[in-house]
Length: 116
Image (cartoon, rainbow, N blue to C red; front, side, top):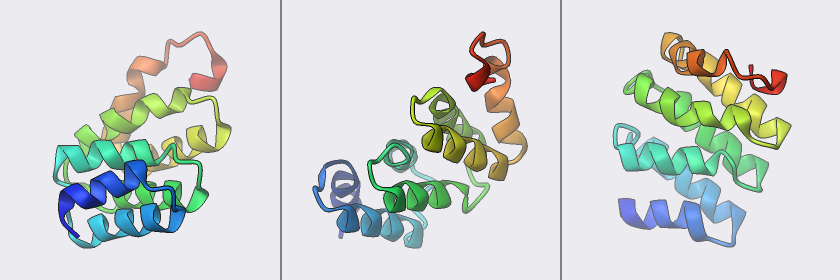
């Protein structure tokens, strides 16, 4: 599948298997140096299906290439209402190393303890 088709499938397919396999294909194609792919994978981290969320998070953390950009995109998910997505975001940021820590600095002063 072409890059555009994979990105569209992650965002619009009704079939969780198709969304998960599309995320996996992007990882296999080493496409995570593309900002649009990173943004789509971050959106996939909020998917209703745990397998899709996990695949997207795994892909984002699979390489340190563009770690700062990835971390900046993932960090807002620590404010998500769903605790599983917040935890997944935190785990992904940890795996991104120093870039993940840097992306969290603006959230340190958040008055909501769930976001600190």
